Each structure stands twice: as C-alpha cells, then as structure tokens.
Length: 145
Image (cartoon, rainbow, N blue to C red; front, top):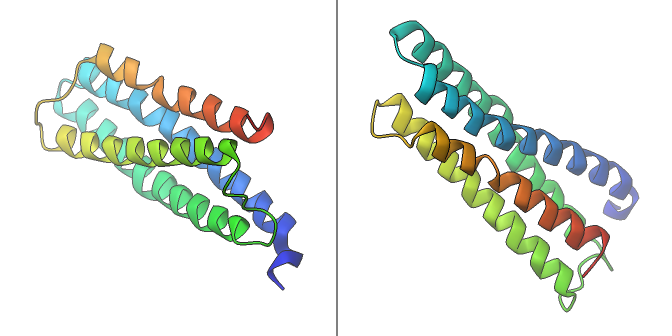
C-alpha cells in the first residue's frame, strides 16, 4: 500500500526539492559570470557547458522528481485539504518556481545562441526569485497560514 511508503516518498521528495533549489540558486549566478566574464571563446564555452549540465543533469530531473513525489504525497488519504489556504499559497509558490525554472532554461538557450541576454545586474536580481519563493513555500507549509 502506498501509505506504507509515505516516509520514504517524503524523504526523497525533500531531497529532490533541495537539489532543485540548489540549481535554481546557482544557474542565475552562472549567467552573471557568463555575461560579465564570459568574453572569449574558452570561458564562454566552459560556462555554457556548466549551464547546460546543471539544467539537464540536475535541475530537470530534480524538478520532475519533486513534482512526481509531491503529487504522490498529495494523493495519500488525509494529506490534501483543498480548503486550507496554506495549500493554495504553496501551490502558487510551486507553480511560480516551475515557471522560473522554465524562464532560466530559456535564458540558457538565449545565451548559448549568443542572443541578447540580460545584464549581470538583472541576473543578480533574478537570483533572488528562488529565495522569495522558498520563504513563501516553507512558511506556508510549516506555519500553515
């Protein structure tokens, strides 16, 4: 029965979210380095490889695992209470985090193609988005407001 696996599913969900968040924190920082110090072929190529591998090898699988495991947890009896305001706030945070992930993937493509990128300052500002979303999600789940 799925309920018997609840602690394991929850543990792997937490690990997946940590890996996903680490990538969301680090990728915009790589973009800053790419834009500000990536002139020349070798630094730009190295940063492009780092950005691609971070996104494809760590962030994408971690995001998918977070979603799948989170939906498994939500499907268990008594876990999902649709009338709880904190749940809707958490869901908003998760959807915003997923949108930000997709936005980062698009920015990586733009940088890889040599297209018009944002400035280092703009990427630094975007680096704060995952922090705000993390605070929102954690507070909504733990404090349940």
